[in-house]
Length: 219
Figure 1: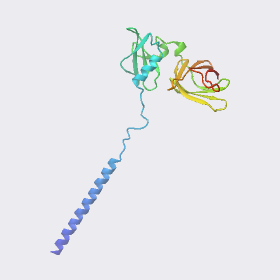
Figure 2 (figure 1 turned 135 degrees about the vertical axis):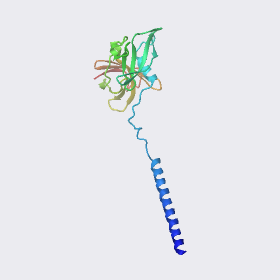
Figure 3 (figure 1 turned 30 degrees about the vertical axis):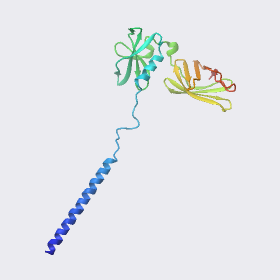
Figure 4 (figure 1 turned 135 degrees about the horizontal axis):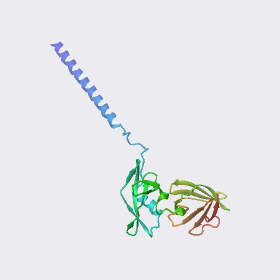
C-alpha cells in the first residue's frame, strides 16, 4: 500500500513539475513575441513631397496673372514618380505640361506623348528667370559678409555678419531663377538679385545704421 502511495505521490510531483516547465516555456515564448520589433520600418524610408508643395513650385515659375495650374493624373516614367500639372491660358490648355519629381522636387517638361524632357524644353521656359543659378559661397560688401549655403533646389540659407561678428542674421530665402526673397514672421523682407559674382541685396526697411543688410556683395 505504501509503495502505491509513494508511486502516486511521485507521479503527481512529475506532472506538477512538467506543468510548471510548460507554463514557463509558454511565458518565455510570449515574452519574446512581445519585444519583437518590426524591422520593415526603418529610418531610411523615402518621403515624397506633397501635392500642394509641388504645385507651388510650378506656379513660382509662371506668370500667374496670365496662366493657371491644374492637377492632372500622376505618372511614373522609368521608375520615377511624378506629379503632373496642366498649364492653362484662360480656358485653353497648353499642349505641354509640367512634371514634378515627387522626391527631389525637380521640374520637367511633360510632353504630349507622355514623355519627360528637361524643363528647358517647356513651352514657357524663360532663360532669364528659369536658368539655374548657383546660390552658394561667401560674398562681401564694405562692412558685411554674406555666406550662402544651398538648402535644397529651391532655397538657400544665408548668414549676414558684420566685421566684428557682433551682429548677424540667418534665414532661408526662396529662389526663383536669379532672384530670391526672404520674409520673417514680423514682415521684414530681403530681396537678393544675382548677376555673375555679384549679389545685390535690398531690404524692406532701414535696419540699424551700424548693420544695414542692403548693398552690393562681391564674391
